Image (cartoon, rainbow, N blue to C red; front, side):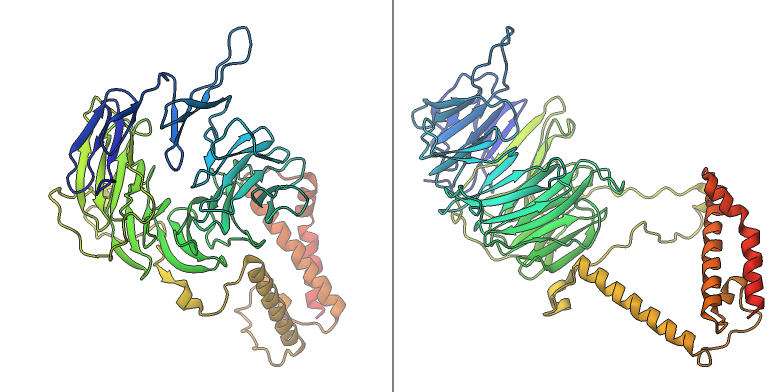
Amino acid sequence: MAPSTPLLTVRGSEGLYMVNGPPHFTESTVFPRVNIISVTNKGLLHSFDLPKAVCLEFSPKNTVLATWQPYTTSKDGTAGIPNLQLYDVKTGTCLKSFIQKKTQNWCPSWSEDETLCARSVNNEVHFFENNNFNTIANKLHLQKINDFVLSPGPQPYKVAVYVPGSKGAPSFVRLYQYPNFAGPHAALANKSFFKADKVTMLWNKKATAVLVIASTDVDKTGASYYGEQTLHYIATNGESAVVQLPKNGPIYDVVWNSSSTEFCAVYGFMPAKATIFNLKCDPVFDFGTGPRNAAYYSPHGHILVLAGFGNLRGQMEVWDVKNYKLISKPVASDSTYFAWCPDGEHILTATCAPRLRVNNGYRIWHYTGSILHKYDVPSNAELWQVSWQPFLDGIFPAKTITYQAVPSEVPNEEPKVATAYRPPALRNKPITNSKLHEEEPPQNMKSQSGNDKPLSKTALKNQRKHEAKKAAKQEARSDKSPDLAPTPGPQSTPRNTISQSISGDPEIDKKIKNLKKKLKAIEQLKEQAATGKQLEKNQLEKIQKETALLQELKDLELGI
């Protein structure tokens, strides 16, 4: 029988132990070494002698334990021993050993019912059925395949694969349905794109669509130190689109709602924007701008936390996404880890090494902003990892959202707000409010746009072209009817606006226009030279012609 509240596993320099979940928070069990322990009765199931193991992972139904240790070769150059082991949790026997040289994608991927298991091997994805690792049930072969992700949920199983571009060819992501891999039309959907050194593929819970974050290591425009990112949407019915993000800048985080009908993206230069999109990639709600770089949906999908961790102060915004109402704004300073409790009510934040080696510890919050429990590691110790006990969906029912902070015996830690430095000359003068950035407030995009679909970047560009042509036509009409145009004052007209006068001869007007264009280019070259830029020989020759061009322009205007 499962416990009434999830347990918390804590790993650090003090050892590995478990803590009872809310509301007790008492220490449950201490383990002197890493073993497989039954959570229900705290009994030892198996113990493995794996001194160099650095990665552990259970299969979804906890029947298989995968362990990985760094791959090493012998001094004489012979191949090393297999470093990826798969153990039967029930019997403790080793089911299979593989050679896995890279840490990236070291762990095999299972379907939720463990009927299917897959791992990447060179240019192939090998599939195993019913945890029989001695027989390869199927293979998906693609040249230079880099990554794959199995879909969640029951059959039919789907897989998304990524192949990076090379020699001018674009990168692409393809969706397949297992085991239909043969033939040119076997793919359910295909999306190709340039500007992708790596991708992150995110299936929604119903396995009907994938979000692809394509990233480049270097932004050739120089706009961002973190490279350039684009967000793509691919559906299993063959539809695909580029998600248009209103603000330029990096994409920090993208997360699906558990309903699989919408997703949230955090993007743009700081202060970053956060927007919820529907399956048509249309914005539904914009949370405005703020210091944030991560988004976390609750297990039931009715609460969304927008947070700013890492190099940000740890500010969190807890939102009711059904009514788009702000619940609380707690601050978890110096946090490096965040996780929702499976009950959908409590939040875990932690400061762990090696990301930060000082002020290590963890906090358990209620989503209304109250701290229910906190633990600070001694100054001579470190906290390495904290995690909730996993549970299957549906164990904890969704509860009604409350907006009033729950009572707590732990006092909230109000962070000290540092005041801005004021030089001595300004300290006795009134303070003027000045901001580096104008903050954008939240807005409901659905009610604002109504039934009209937001314009894409291409549509906006075409609309601007159309408006520019329309304005040019109106200007041409006003040029043909000078009597209707207002007559400017004789002394208020500067020298460079004489081109508004009309000679009546199209050839002369054309010459005047060209001369003014050349003089404008000369002015720009002179400004560049004034800033210290080295000009080319032909550019210097253009500047020398300025006097002659001015005289020619004067003669033409006097002849009008």
